[in-house]
Image (cartoon, rainbow, N blue to C red; front, top):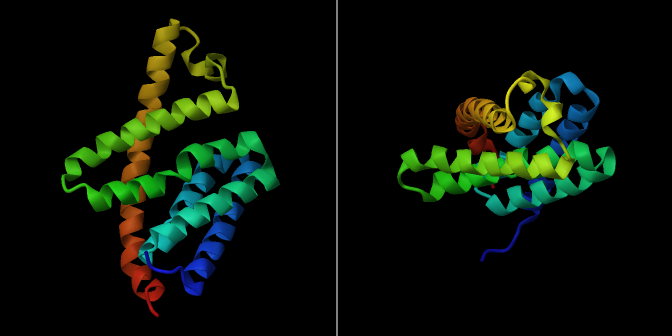
Length: 177
C-alpha cells in the first residue's frame, strides 16, 4: 500500500469542503435539494479523477461528518446513504466489472437498498407521498419504487456522462505531480 501524499489529503479536503457546501445548500434551498445532493455526488469524484479512491473515501467520510454538524440528521441521511456512497460504488463497479451489462442492475439494487435505508432512517411514511393516496398499500410501495428507480436510472446516465466529460477535462490537471 502506497503512502498517502499531501496532495491527496489536500484534494480530499477541498473536495470535502465543496461537498459540504452542496449539502448545506441542499438543506437551505429546498426546491433544489436533489440538484445540490447530485452536485455533491459529482464533487466527490474529483479525487477519483486523480486515481485516488482512498481520497474520495476520505472526502466522503469528512463531508458526511461535517454535514451532520451543519444541517442535522434528517437532511444529511440522503447524502450519507445514497448520494455520497454512489460515486464510490459506481467507480468500483465500473473499474472491476468487465461486463458493463451487469453494472446498471447492480447499481439499481444499490439505489433501491439506499432508498429503503433512507426511508427508515428519516422516518418517512407512505402518507408522505400524496400522489399514491388512492392505491392499496402494496401498490403505493410499488409505484414509489418504480418512480424512484426511473429517476435513479436517469441520474445514473447523467452522472456517468458528466463524470466522463469531467474526467477528460480535469484528469490531466489533477494527475500532475
